[in-house]
Length: 185
Image (cartoon, rainbow, N blue to C red):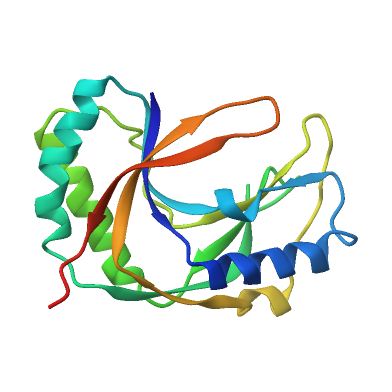
């Protein structure tokens, strides 16, 4: 299965993202909006994994989850990849809760490295992809000052997830395979 580890969004944050997408749809051209139900914060991208890898993750990640308490995460700010020139990806950032989020990612990375599970080694840049440029179309969009503090809400992170990704012609379908809950202390 094609897999990744993520923090999934609450309905309230997804609704705020959908409102933003509808507001911007007539202003930003040549992009394909990510379906709000598919927007998530990737902690680790794994790619294709065997069933045995999923079983190993089911064993090594609960101890990571037990190290954390639920924490607030504010989804705020808009940016682009690359930061200059034609847009490839339009994303939302994280404002409140960044230290807890980066600590969680580091613990997941260490557990996966210790178990010799391969994953994408790119530096962790917390973001949520909300749109991509349409192939072979140039999109120039520079988020102005009004987007720097734009907030999509604060949610309580109570778990992270092992997700399966099925790539289909109409777009991906994401299915939760394992939920790793934080203890309520």
